[in-house]
Length: 331
Image (tube, rainbow, N blue to C red; front, side, top):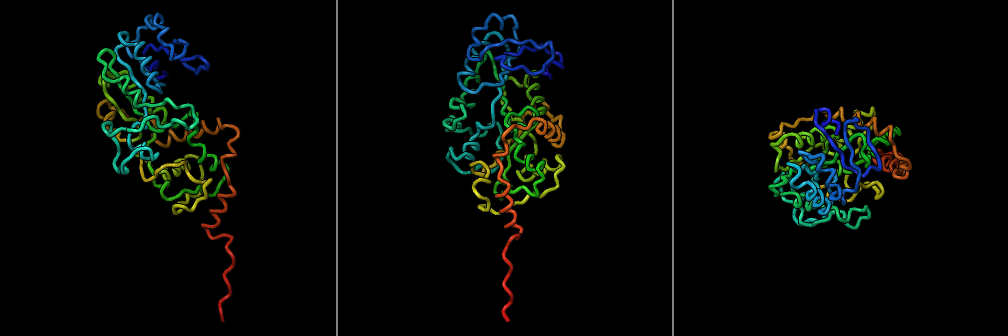
């Protein structure tokens, strides 16, 4: 919103109003529930938007409600999707049949056949499905859609605190961060939040994006070990990233369940070639800003996520500390 305003666009934000972020005074606000957006037809008619940007379409019903409200009113709609639509993502979670995919996925890669990836996990996302969101907004000549498939996004304001587990260990002066070999080599496309904002603004303002789908993300996808080393470089941590053979870490120190032979690497060539997208913040800049924010917004009660004695025991075993003395040589 700030970037669109700074570029001279008139911006109106439709949201619940339960919280307010700091935005320029010229940004107008309409408060309401998105599921009832059709009840705001008079206000939307007064705004008469050229382009609609839907940042939070999680379900088919979400997308249908917004499309219906703006069909015949706006010229285009931009919908934020996710790279979890790809079959590779389903294979990572062992919910999609087929062998692991070795190549990066472009926008034409196969999508998941198993829908509702988070149903039943207790996170309140039983109806979440970006594949159905995309289908609901695609193919309309009256309100043509642009779809942006986002990667793992990090940066200030991240409610998931995606740098937390590594950064807290570094700030606590841990001597090492332990990773199993398969996880250490695993690659997952990421992008800094301000770079993602640039991509979104391009899609909103450039009519060449009409009817197109784009992957968004860094052009260079780091392994997890190199990702941790990049955080360390910008956090001032001089400890060691220790890569262990698979199966050496106790269960409580294992990464989340997944098939780490299946990398999640996006090909972002299309948005770079068609819209001229470029990162405005290099990796180290984005990480330094994210680290500053994480240190200033550390959530309470996170100590329970860590078991430093267990880590120390594994590290001592790896380094040979605490082993019984070798028996004297036989004479």
